[in-house]
Length: 162
Image 1 (cartoon, rainbow, N blue to C red):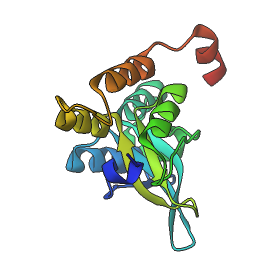
Image 2 (cartoon, helix red, strand yellow):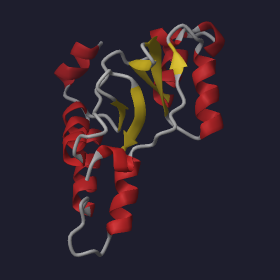
Image 3 (spheres, rainbow, N blue to C red):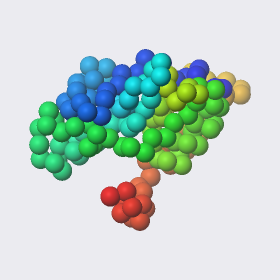
Image 4 (cartoon, one colour):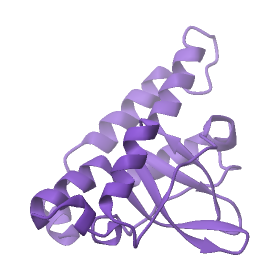
């Protein structure tokens, strides 16, 4: 199964120079926990960062300022891991596991954002396939991926990230 079959195509984004309250508003209005941070590119937008609801909370806590006073760029993750619409789901799962991320932006060959793939997308598909004789996404695969991306990072990795 290919990523394009499961990815969410309508993705709500923000820009690095906007305040964090803009991203929080997007998350609230669209019931999502992540917002890709994009920059204009030829014929579309490419992802320059990812911002989670946790990133917003931690930025507010550590900086002690209002969300309107904190730029998205200061809270977003700048290390973006992505996949292509034509990638096999197994490849996307490996990227999620290797980098302990629950969501991947999906970019085309020109690196333009075309969708978002989440562990939730995989779980929904596994549920639809549940009980079939040859599921493309077995329940165990989703469970293992969730366990791996949720595992605590090693102490050395936490120090290196700081």
